[in-house]
Length: 45
Image (cartoon, rainbow, N blue to C red):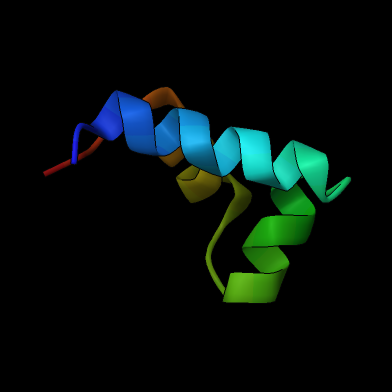
C-alpha cells in the first residue's frame, strides 16, 4: 500500500475517533513523532 494513502487513512480514522497523534501513539506504544511520520508518508531507513 502506498505510504501516502496509508497515512491519510490513519489520520482520518484518528480524527474520526477524536484522538490526537499523542493519544494514538500512547495507545499503540510508539512515539507521537512516529505517528506524524506515518501520517505524512515519511519513512526513515
